[in-house]
Length: 297
Image 1 (cartoon, rainbow, N blue to C red):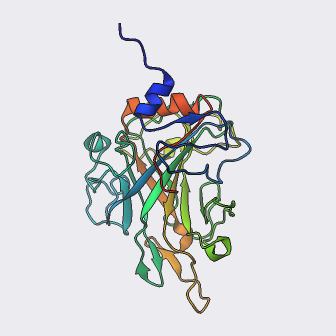
Image 2 (image 1 turned 30 degrees about the vertical axis):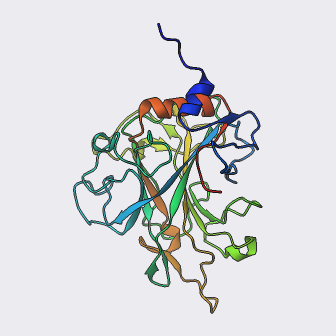
Image 3 (image 1 turned 90 degrees about the vertical axis):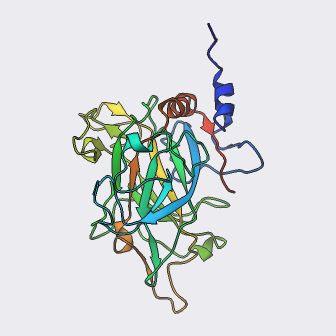
C-alpha cells in the first residue's frame, strides 16, 4: 500500500507552503502577499489564496441566464478560460484556467468597472478563502453555483457582503460601501470585493442557481438555524487598476456595467478539482494554518 503523502508534501505539490503564524505568509518563490484586511478577530487562522488574471469579457451569465448568449450586462471572467452562456460545472471541469493552481478550473465573474462612461478592464482577481471563525468547514461541493451581492441594488449593500478598499499593504485601508480615492494610501488601486455566503442548507436547485440555499453567518463561527453545512468563506478581490473614482475636477465618475457602484456582485461556478480543493480545506482552513499561493506583490 502506498502511504498517504504528508500534508506538507501535498501542499508543496499544490503550489503552497504553510506557516503557523497568522501574520506570516510565504510563497514558493520571491513573491509575497499579505493576509487581506478582511481577516477579522473572529478568524481562527485558516486561510489560503489563489491569483487569477482576467481571462475574457462578455455579456454572458451562465448562472442567471443559462443558454442565453449576450443576455446581460458586461462581465469580466476570471479562472476558467471557456466560461460562456452554455457553461456548466461539468463542462468547466479540468478546463484551461488563468488561476495559479491548475486545479482551480472554476468560473468567476463580476461586472466591469467603468470610469466616466469608459469600461476599464481589471488585470486580475485574487481569491481569498477563510475559515470565518469556524473550527471545521466542508469543501464547497463540486457544481455549486452561487451569486453574491445584488445586481439590482438601489442603495448601499452590507459591507460584510460587498465592499471597496485600497488593499492592505503597507497599511490596512477601510472597507466601504462606496469606492474612494486611493491616493491617500500611497497610490494603491481600488479593489472591488465580493464576499460569498458560508452557510449551506445542503440542498441544490434544479435550475443550477443554488444561491437561495445559502446564508451568511450571524457572527463568526455561527450559522443561522437550518444551515448545518459550513463552507469556507470565499472572497473575490478584483483589482481594478483605478487609483481614484474621481476625475480631475473632483467629480465622482465610477460606476459598473450593471449600474451604479452599489450594484456590485459576483458569480462563482464551482468546477475546482474536488481533490485539490479538499486538500486546501483540510491542510489550511481546517488546520487553521496560513497558506500562500503564487500571487503578485
